[in-house]
Image (cartoon, rainbow, N blue to C red; front, side, top):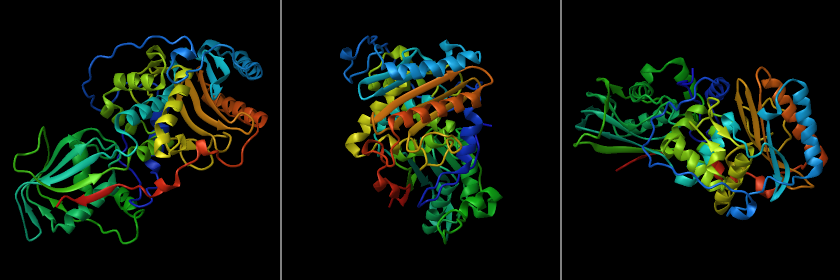
Length: 453
């Protein structure tokens, strides 16, 4: 199942949940689901960008697909020949590599191919363009009626604000704050308004039922109890009993009075978690918040300076073979993300997995250490992209997309061997260069739950 009502994130250290790993591994390899399950925001029509034929036409110095490096090209030709000998068409493979504005390798680099979860690179870029690195999604809690002797004589209302990572721990924090406000019983209903998602479920009533359970420790399952144990020692178990039902409303009641506000992690940290575990549910929610797949596609292509024809998306996660990206476009999107992060003293390492440092879906992969990467997997697609630090060529940006049935593990193994060989040839580094270093000052970032008054 795509939606798993489970998460494990500390309120302080925010270690990433095993459930999101399961979610990414399970859904990431399924080629059938191709439509976003999150509600789509309305958007204005998108016009096509003009095609770019040379670097001089791009404001970002987009590398021309002509005259790649001869030595690297020979290596890639050998790589492709090996796949061809196994029966995999070269037309189903795509490669793009560059260092700075120097093109190292190009095989079908401008051809849009099924890219699986490399789609999340586009979603990340579009989200950063829309909201900025420090944007937090806000969930508000309000009430009707009065509070007397620990009893709220009215309804409790949760107004969602597109938080893609509101999980058990968030519910526990909100419940404890309600207890601090001397609310232990609610005589009315729990009313859900707006885009409230809990534990990656985008159905508002189902999310409300999960919140109702999380607010009251007497209703906790073993799953919730286990998540509570990951929180800082001494974290109270909330006791907020709601007598009524979960109701869904289109707007706040006129007599609603604000009580609490919960702010998510900043966007940069949300994207890092999404990408490390290739979480499809988070990607769909974030893409929907941006405006849907067409808006993500347009914003990503525009920010990267590539033709719209190289960025063709039907959802924000990469589920389904209909999502197509050219290798060059993926590379350009990484570079666009790098540009957008630089003013905030962040790098792509603050958004994607750093091999050997970050746990996630790449744990078992034999990719050169310190590479900053994003992978993608479907039944007949394996993709790997990112930045490879080297001593001779500096940071090499690479994209490898492989297509073909029944060879997922073979594609992965060959990708890893290719990168290890290039890393050895160009000189592996022992420490991350500044351009691929994590900003340690961001480690203290955490969600914030606070009283309104």
